Amino acid sequence: MPRNLSIGFSPCPNDTYIFHALATGLIQWPGGLSVTLADVEELNGLAASGSLDVVKISVAAAAGILDDYVLLRAGGAMGYGAGPVLVSGRDRTLESLDGARVAIPGERTTANLIFGLCCREAGIAVERVPMVFDEVMPAVEAGSVEAGVVIHEGRFTFSERGLKRVLDLGAWWEGFTGLPIPLGAIAIRRSLGEDTARRMNEAIRRSLGAARANPEAGRDYVRSHAQELSEDVVCSHIETFVTDYSLDVGESGMEAVSRLLAEAGCTRKDIFIEI
Image 1 (spheres, one colour):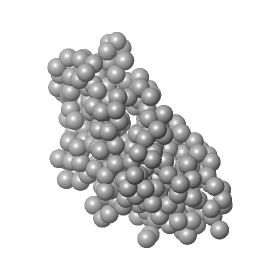
Image 2 (cartoon, rainbow, N blue to C red):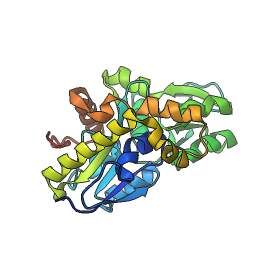
Image 3 (tube, rainbow, N blue to C red):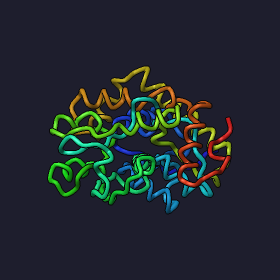
Image 4 (tube, rainbow, N blue to C red):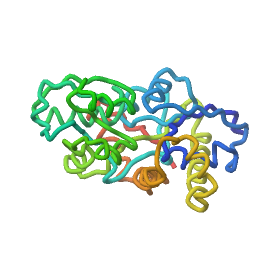
């Protein structure tokens, strides 16, 4: 029988939408769950230290934890037209940022990895300044950095703050690889065993299914963790980052993750649980 597990995911609308039913007991986990909500880079750090049994991570961060964790096929963020965006306070090109200070939403994030690939392909070098994702746009506005990589709701709100898009990093990745952009994934401890991993994968699928069948049931839960976001932004966030890949990554999704991790220097084959 599955024991009590510690699980961590972000307060972003896509995660709270997916995990609401599971986290609140509408979809029951035998033994119960201890839930932690934290910023994605904090979650990446908790995974690196082995502090959680089940944890939402940036796909790029998986490269450093696969000895201890394996990825589930459900619950992640992946798709087309869903990537991070490089923004600046004025019209610029990527090449014009050579030597500039650029804010990034954490060193372990997929956004940072893909931005680094863009810079490599463009033949430029920048000074990357790590910060919490919601500090990136204020830093660009204040002029303490010349540009910033925005994720989450920043994709939908940067223009409202007078910022200019330099490059859509998701579109760049799609053109570079022909694959969907693998932003986030759910990792589970290998030591829990394959049966528990499959049970958790199915529980997450059921939780997402419950959200899609009755979106109103989790509305207050999602809103309570997205207090500063408008209803339109919350809806756009969910529509963009919760896709059919969130139910199952499929063959193209697994290929996308493998490709991204290869770019991070990881060539493991046993990345995902076997269904």
